Amino acid sequence: MNILDKIIERKKQEVADAKSKISIEQLKDTEFFNKPTFSLKETIKTKSGIISEFKRQSPSKGIINDKVPPLEVVSQYEKFGASAVSILTDKDFFGGSFEDILSVRNHIKIPILRKDFMIDEYQFYEAKSIGADVILLIASCLSPTQVLEFTELAHSLNLEVLLEIHSGEELKHINKNVDFVGINNRNLKDFKVDLQHSVDLKNQLPDDILSVAESGIYNEEDFKFLEEKGFDGFLMGEYFIKNENPGEKFGEFVSKMRI
Ligand SMILES: O=P(O)(O)OC[C@@H](O)[C@@H](O)c1c[nH]c2ccccc12
Image 1 (cartoon, rainbow, N blue to C red):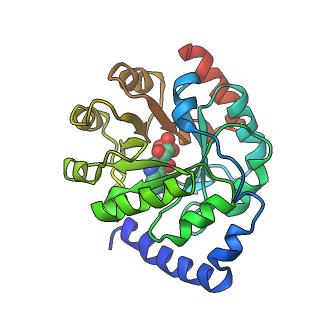
Image 2 (tube, rainbow, N blue to C red):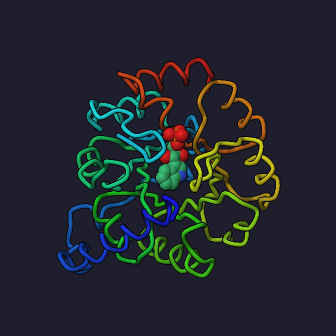
């Protein structure tokens, strides 16, 4: 079984447990559920275009940084011009939690992407109740019909949708309602990174869709290369988070790139 299958199997159990503890009605009754959201569609154009990520660990890299608190990191990301922050909420494989979003929500005014593996409607209500603005849909874990239905549900809750694809096969998961198409430079099944593969795929996207290059952007050349190919957004995690002071590293990067 590959890692992605393992994650999804575990996620099903996790969602079943959560459902048995807290109902959707209870989620609707939380502080953030009815608050207005922040739009990445706006900030992707007006700020740096970078969605900078907070994560402690990943299946491909193990522990990356478990020393810095989320608020310290994301406040700096905001200060230096991040269009949004991505926060992993998966616990077992990425060391995240809802608390990582809850603890920062009231302190930043840019969109938060809840980065998790969405497989069930329940998780959209959860995302909204913790104060997320954008959710990720991973094409390789869903059918095109599920992508369509989940997008409608997300929009009904005022959440924006980043649809992640990695192969030509997955182009058929795209529908005109998704807000952004992310192309993962990393294959989630074997962790290989290939930027040219992503550019080839980007050239097959509909013209009017906002595109995000995701993962494995490890230096200035990688970023420039993808920027020149016309990506609108860039999802970057490890390059910043692996440092003692990820926020400062992000600030240096933005000023060096003059974005
Ligand atoms: O740390 P990186 O290589 O810069 O990658 C960030 C982000 O793109 C990556 O965490 C990611 C992209 N899609 C995902 C899906 C699930 C888990 C993680 C991811």
